[in-house]
Image (cartoon, rainbow, N blue to C red; front, side):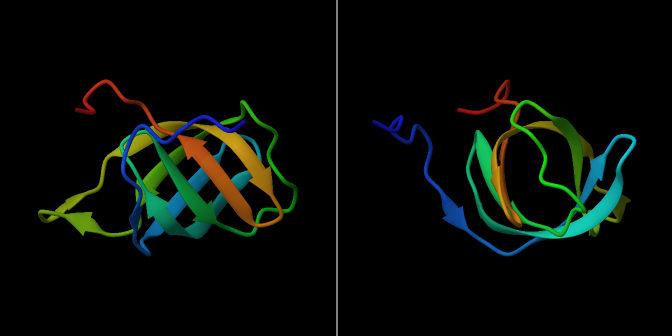
Length: 92
């Protein structure tokens, strides 16, 4: 039985830079975000395995500054859809 959602999912399409160390960087688009995970659609040459760490960054400026980079871990990936676990230190 799947684990119940702890945080609300917010459907939103944001362009995100996804850096996979030693594999390259692509631009993806979110399908939803929540306080602890996000679903992104992106075209990698190979599907990342669960547990793979990647770096995510909004592909825009925030308050006239480059957006922060967030380390995320792949929970699941199938085809072009990747669900990332996000750090939850500041999640309420």
